[in-house]
Image (cartoon, rainbow, N blue to C red; front, side, top):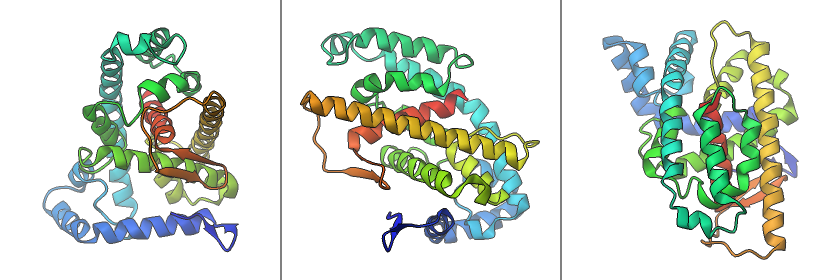
Length: 283
């Protein structure tokens, strides 16, 4: 998706409207079915099992309330499941692969990451940045087990999270970086209350129903700052690897252009998205 128009970066409200409309067209028919079903069962049930199938044009305060309640209940339960799967997947990486790794002290870095994730109340999002080279080489979205990728999708409210989970998660990571830049450019104050709720929901951030708009807006600003730091870490690593002329394990023509800030290849974005996804499970 292009984020430029006539040489100028478009406003977030325009891009968000385009994305929302495209999603609505894709969910129009199942959305109507879900709304009818909600009259026969409950709206809360629909939001629990098919949160993305109701087009946003049908949204009202009742639907948003149901969506928020369902999302927070799921996040609280699913985050621990995801972290346990991440730890198990890390421990399953063969020691021989880490011993021969081009990443210095790869085994020690795996141990560090496992220890940090075992006590998520003590870990900060920024702690993950130091481990970017290890994650890039050994534990990214492209190489992690499918079961873990599906669990990430469930944590992030994907409908049918087991369906094409890797490509959907990569698109999510790509959009998060772009949207964070747009929010930083336009200012969080430009967002309506519903847009703030929508952005919090998309990012998998924690909801607190007593939160005011300023509190949630602050969470978006902090997320945008973390995304910027993550992009800097990814860019620095890319430059270091290029200067060393390190060949990659897999070649790919797929690239992700994050506005005019950076261009990442598929492995870069797989590592970036892994860190973004893990960070959603620790806060």
